[in-house]
Length: 90
Image (cartoon, rainbow, N blue to C red):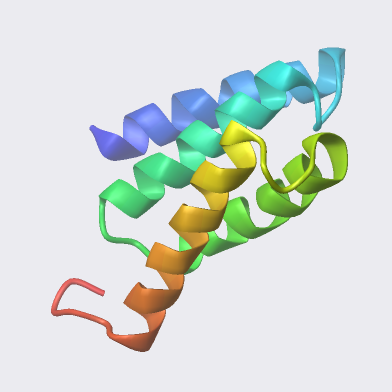
């Protein structure tokens, strides 16, 4: 089910990237959703690959204090904790 949701989100993101750009508001939201879905399922390496460049893009566009930047900064902190302290599911 998660795999299907990720595949669908990634397909929509590909369409948005083609039609608009990787840093359009819709693309940023989709990238965030993908990262959060990966993180919610206790994956750490995959969300880092999504959230880290997303955070850099959001900070470049909106600055470090925007809502999406703060959410992604917190997600990166959680990811780093997961990488430093992998649990039985990591």
